[in-house]
Each structure stands twice: as structure tokens, then as C-alpha cells.
Image (tube, rainbow, N blue to C red):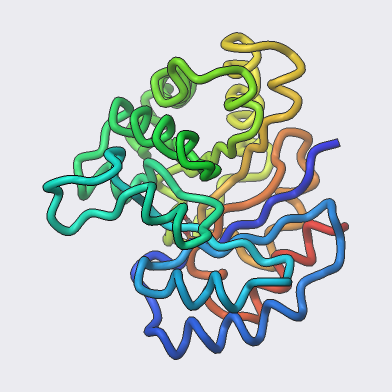
Length: 252
Ligand SMILES: O=C[C@H](O)COP(=O)(O)O
């Protein structure tokens, strides 16, 4: 049985005092249940405070991006070494907003995933189709390609330990959630691609999240689906009460 993994992606929101308050409200109130994991992926400036405040609690702290190099002349970038040094445990890689606005490709995603594993960070690898691709019946081929290229040359053990987030781009921040069965169909395809790349055991281990306008009111139905193991949540992860409800859903 796979754990349920609920990750908040704050994107470019909050100031430090708000991040601080969030950690105070959430860290002591998470369910005491080993079968559910709670992660907050926050902007870089908040990471040291959040890691400190999350110590001794069930809350894990992730970053939203990183460079694939360890150091060097990359003005404005943050390296995996820096994240590891801070005590960050997870990193979102290849979010559609980074692919669209910052020219990330499946190849850079793959380099970043390797770099994450070299520094003991668990990657949350994002894949998803545009509305045009969905309407042209290209969803499955597009997602398969993203998974195969993004996870290239990883060991079976690495693939079994990472998180894949399926986020249809047309459902992000729009209030449109994919129907739970449509979302599950794509998550099931992702699992079969992983199986083809590795083995049945690894495919059974890998955590696959759904993301795109997930709210406390919609998460239960999504988590009931056989191939959906959690959620990557933007807007509804910003407030403590809502985040706690999302995590609570993982315990059911
Ligand atoms: O990473 C999170 C996703 O982009 C979903 O964002 P959203 O829940 O605000 O639609």
C-alpha cells in the first residue's frame, strides 16, 4: 500500500511573517499517521525558517525549483547543494509554469532530477498536457514522452522513490479540475510507462499525484482513485486550515 502524499506549492506568494505563521499553525496540528506525508514547497527566502520550524513535526519542506549544477556562474540560481545544506527534503521539478515561462525542457528536467538524487532530495516531477494537446488526443503520447525523457537513465531504485505529479495545464489555477476518472486514467498510464521502464514492483511503489485546482471539497474523490496517491496543490495550500483539511483527506 502506497502512502498518500499531499504537497503544497505556494508558488510566488506570502512574505516571511506569513510563512512563519503558517508553520506555527500547521506543524503541531498535522495528523499523526505514518501513511500520509505533508510537504510545503515554498519560495527560497522562506526555506531556512520553515525547515527550522518544521523540526520535530511531520511537516516536510521542499523547494519549487533548482539549477542542475552544483555551483558556478549562474546569477540568480539556487543549487541542489544549497538546498541539501538547508535541510530541504523535496524539490518540484519541471512545473508547467517553469516549462512555459522559463524555457525548461524534458532534458533540463532530466538533468535536475539526476542532480536532486545526487543531493538526497526527492524530486516531485511535474508532467501535464495543454488544452490543445488534450483536444487533439495527444495527452497520452505527450505525457509518455515527458515521463520517458524526464526519468532517463535513473536507476529503478531512484524511480521507485520519486514523486510524479500529473498536472493538466488547463486545470491549474482555473477552478477546472479534471474529473477524477480522467485524472486516474492518465495517472494509470504514467504507472504503466514506469512499469515498462523498470518493473512491476517499481511501478507499484512510485507515488503519483494529481494537481490542478484541488480543493478540500474535491480531494476525497481524487484520492479514492486507484492510481492517484496524493495531490500537488497551489491555491488551496496557502491557508493553514485548508492545507490541514487536504492532509486530513489523506488519512481516510
Ligand atoms: O503546483 C500546483 C499546481 O500548479 C496546481 O495549482 P492550483 O491548485 O492553484 O490549481
